Image 1 (cartoon, rainbow, N blue to C red):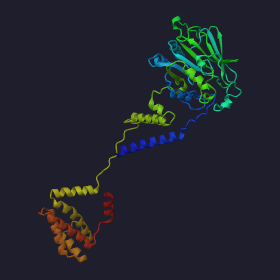
Image 2: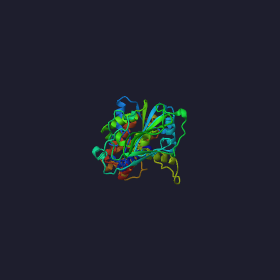
Image 3: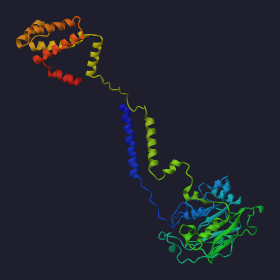
Length: 442
């Protein structure tokens, strides 16, 4: 039991040391300040570059919105059938793979509406048929630019007005983009992402030209366009600042965001998968992500595996276990006394005590141990005030009991008391060596 307790305490101490070391060495990730260089366009983000305000507004206004945290391939499944509009905001943290882009194009071909809000048109989404769509920016953000400062973000920017009345420009007088907004350029011609669209796959609410439609623009180019792709439309807005938590408050930016994202009735899905907010399959790992708990758990598992591997494994020559006598002198005396009492062997009890007393008396009298009891008694009488006859009688009674004379426990106790009294009167005690040995045996 003591060995097991030692192992358990050692294990607990090791775990404690690991916890302390991991806690001390753990460095909490500093929260990065929002910037237009590395923006966070997630609808979970409440900072200046995030889009949480737009998501919450649509949700509280009664629109069906959700955060899409699966890969785009899931849009082709049963879950994707419920999604009417798929929204991607900004340059995502995770790029679209070729398979994901192909799945997104297939989903739009089947009737989905895709909304891209970004300054770049390099997203691998559906592109207009027989037209080239490029983006061009006249200014680029720096680390000194504060996305929370609306005045700085829109410095020297002239609000843009719709170029024609459309469903996307309904109730819009002007919108205020940032000074980093791109301008879209459309030109007829072939491009790398041409798709063959069947005649019966024409969009439900656009019956004529497949050419892109410009809704808002200035002399430098378009800010908002849309075009057919399969059975549905693709909408491109070239400045994510308009839908951010800061930019949505300027002019009619909020109305424009509502018109663009809710242009089709049904469930609206904001892409959070490519914003780095994909579903965590391991709930435990996701809950403790960014803390030292995962590192501690891994180290504890490694320690347990090491203990299991080394269990009963010998790393040296075999050694015999130390044998220790666990019996004490008191246990021996108690056991002997109990055995003698149960067997009524009072002669043995008297013999044990009388033998020692006779040896002490003979030494006190200056005689040999084998001397007769009369000689020992006579010498004791001459050297002390003890009656020699009483001493001889006591010794004779003890020897008779030892030699088989019937005796009961009261008589045995009386003889022992008289022997102890004799030693006391003569001032006889054990020698220092006997005392030391007795102390060591206890």
